[in-house]
Image (cartoon, rainbow, N blue to C red; front, side, top):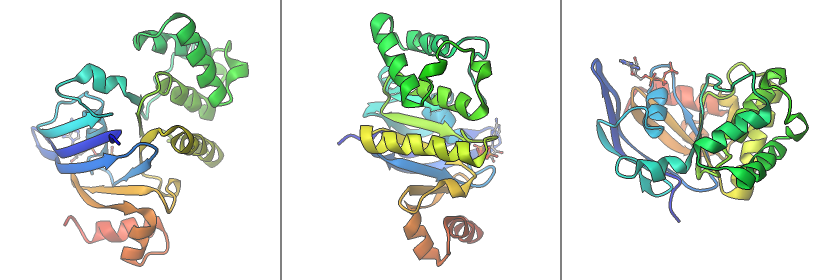
Length: 244
Ligand SMILES: Nc1ncnc2c1ncn2[C@@H]1O[C@H](COP(=O)(O)OP(=O)(O)OP(=O)(O)O)[C@@H](O)[C@H]1O
């Protein structure tokens, strides 16, 4: 089966030097993958490459089997993104925010209405469809952003520190929704965070350090490998050993 995301020998260089070097990884359908790393590891640069805000200095990116460099339209049509900073229009209603996004994806009429009804219901927001987004709590605003990112049924959802500023109950609820979408609908998620308690033992985890992959494997395997009692401890031990 085609991977939702496949990165091969990916590199990115700012004028000041390399931010990413020789990154190879894949995220299969149905897989919730955690991307962890300290400040400056290269997480945001990687997200900016996958979303095509930056062009790679070397290597390739394929989304849903489509090469992002050669077929950007097809590749980006298979991608949903939630950034750390909200991009909702708070003065528009929930439905209007989603309709606007649907139009950007070339969806209109009854197809768009059906998709937005489904998207709001999926996150328990259907009763608020005619309220302005401003009326939502922080956690529900993030749910609306997730609903919007999934409107066009992407193969891959990339979330960059999407739970920053939320209380732990809202974080748990968001993660539970997404894990269910992975399990039930085959959605692939690449989730970047510095909050290690968001990872579960069975999640595939990628640890970035100084622009390179320091370790990857199931959370449980990283704990066994390092002898740590939890994932946070495992990642700390791996990072303290320094880049390999
Ligand atoms: N616009 C830029 N110009 C030059 N160097 C940059 C730029 N943005 C990031 N860098 C450098 O690239 C490296 C990777 O940074 P990046 O922001 O991708 O890491 P990060 O893991 O997302 O960190 P954080 O969690 O702090 O956002 C760092 O050394 C950073 O200083």
